[in-house]
Length: 433
Length: 143
Image 1 (cartoon, each protein chain N blue to C red):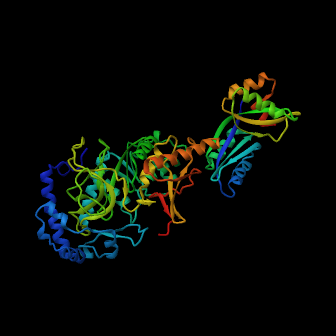
Image 2 (image 1 turned 180 degrees about the vertical axis):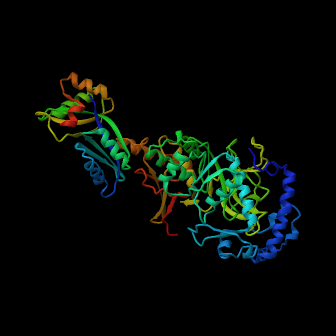
């Protein structure tokens, strides 16, 4: 099913024309109303009048997370506070939080996009959506919630946490769609097993998972354990929240970007040069319909590839591959670039290993060391120490082979690695650099 | 003729072993024999208990990674060369001992050893054919 049949299946020329018109209007508006953008455009020697084609847009400057922090809290808003009806903020774990605002029209746009995303993921008005994304300043919970209501589905605003109660609700209310972070979905599966509730007996058909990078192997793991079809959803609060791009359940092969609202670009993170379709680089977004918090060429730090090929679902929107990592959680260990998602892929290739792991990086005598903690499971446990040591060596060998980095592998007890209710903590970097 | 052995994965950190014994004590499970094999990071605790099912469930419910393995209890003549006789037999039949440990209680005048073999059935036959006593599970749990 396609929610917005007209806009999700536009021919490329018609879509480009819409994008150019909306982009020009957005550039004019931020130039007039946001001092930050006016200054940046002037420094680059350009004005919104210089835009004659989408190619001209490559001359405009990027916006970074640091720019948002520098303008904390409301410096990037393009409308007076009177017109702002909602404020969200990022968690700010690595510094000052970033704050975003929405007008009533923005909330409606977001709801429509989320309705599109949920539809792509297999939801319809007859579905009951168990929404385990956190409600609050984080955009995940409310984003899904408004989209579900716009779609006309029944939404259970269960939010994150209180996992036992969630299992009981799943058992008693019979939700058909699960929305959560992928790590929390696996946590739900574990908890259900402990409570003697089998996902096989629940009514879930589809799960729509996002807000953190997850691998293709993790998808298989989730589908096997939760007995549902798992699709990916992408978004970030700086752009609008969830609903920037969504995977269709028909293909499960990349996320359709809602290009009538956001212009994606892939750049080389080192040079800033725009890369052609098919090449891997940093994803950059420009919003072209937002009122309160428009954003120009925002560097997401997410690494992916764009694929313009037509999709079996009928959408003509370009697809982004599953995010394979982030430029900022990229670890450089003795000169080798390592993404946690790569380690995850290696682990999932090994029989009996669960995707519960943590990377600990230290610097000993000026040398980086990587330790990979991996939880033992009933399937990988053995009464023979040598078998367990072989397992450690096998993991270490695979990491070395695939990533070219030496890692010490340490088996730990089940649940030894903290399960977050939201985003999993995959990396502990103890290096003082 | 096999004996069930419970094994538990333990991280090498203070107090972890006592958490296992606490859990077993609370549920009234009696430990008949045990051994610990360890590396710098982790250890594997192996136990012969009086109630396998209950021990398995209790430990699992308390979040431990638990396995159950078939081992063999053998009466070893309590005199010089008693153990050697057994190991020599096994060696000549090319049966490997993965590990072994002693039972606290005696069976009559004999000591009892727990063996983990790579070929368990062959090992049992071999021992019995050579006049050694392989102790049944039900007897071992009650020793």
